[in-house]
Length: 438
Figure: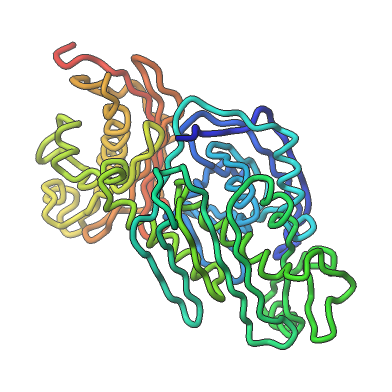
C-alpha cells in the first residue's frame, strides 16, 4: 500500500486563461495528510475555498470546472492530471483569478513546476479503489467503462490502464486510439505534453459564445483538413493523447487511486463527470468505503448525544478522515420551531442553522477513537454570515472542514448551501471534554 503525498515547498506559475483571457497566478502549497486538494480564490473576499471533489463538478463547454457555493475555478483538468501523474494527494492551490492559466495548452509546464517543488511522502496510506465489476455510462455517442484489472491484485498494487478511441467523424481529425498505463515517467513523456486542440470550424461558435478569448495558435492546436495552423504536432496521435490527459484529470475527482482498466470512446468532460460520479457511487456501496462515505442516523446518534427535537443532522454523505464531512438536513414543516418562528411565515432560525453546522463539525471531531465518550463544546463562533432565509422544503447541504485540531481543541470552518447557493457560514472553535465534565 502506497502512502499519501504532497510537495516539499511552495511553487508558482502564471499566465492567462484560454477561455477568459484573464491573468492568474497559481501557487501550490504543501498540505497535511487527508487534506485532499483545495483551491483558494485569493482574489475574492474571505479567500473562499473550493475542494477538488466529485460533488463540486460543474459542466462547462470543453472544460472541467469546480464550484462550491457561489465560487468557481475553471479549467482544472490539466492541474488535476498532473497531481494524478505524480501521485500527489494533498495540496492547497491558491489562485488569484477564475481560470487556471493555459500555458502552452498542455500539462507539461504545470508538471515542470510541481517537479521543482519536489515530492514528499506522508505517513498515512493513500485511498485506493480496485475495480471489481464493470461500471459504465453513456452520454450521447460517448461511452466509458471501468473493468477489473487483468490479474488479481490488492488495491493500489496495480496501475490504472486507459484505452481511448477518438472518432470525431471529421476528416480533419482522423480516428486515433491509444492504450496507456499510468506511470510517472511515461506520463511526463507521453501524456503531459499533449496540447488542447480545436477543429477550425468551431472557432466561429466559440466567438459567438464569447469563449476562447485567450486562445492563440500557440496554446491551442487549430485543425483543418490541410493540417495544423501555424503550429505542428508533437506526436502523430497528439489528439488522442490529450483526450487521455483530460480523462486522467477528471478521474482524479474520484478521490482515490484507481486500479483497473478504463475503456473510453469519444468521451469529453460531460461524460467524464458522469462516469466519475458513477464510480464514486459504486465505491460508497463497498464495505471498505461505506463508513468513510456516509453515516446514517443511527451512526450519527452513536457519535452525538443530541436527540429530538435538537438533532439537526439527518445524514452524513461523505467523510474524509478527520479533515472534512458533508451532511444533509432536510427542513420540513413539521419542525417544532416553525410553530413560533414565525406563524404564517415559517423561517428556520439562524441560530439553528449554526447549530446544525456545529453538529456536523462535532461528528467530524468525535469520530476519532480517542475521542470516544467526549463532548464537543463550542468555545467561540466567528465570521458568521446568514445570507438567505431557510424555509420548509429546503435541503441544507452542510460542509465542515477541520482547520486546526489538537488533543483538547478544534477549529472547524462550516458552510450550509441550498441548491448550490451558500446560505450560511461560520468558523467554530470547540473544546473536547470528557462526558460528565462540567
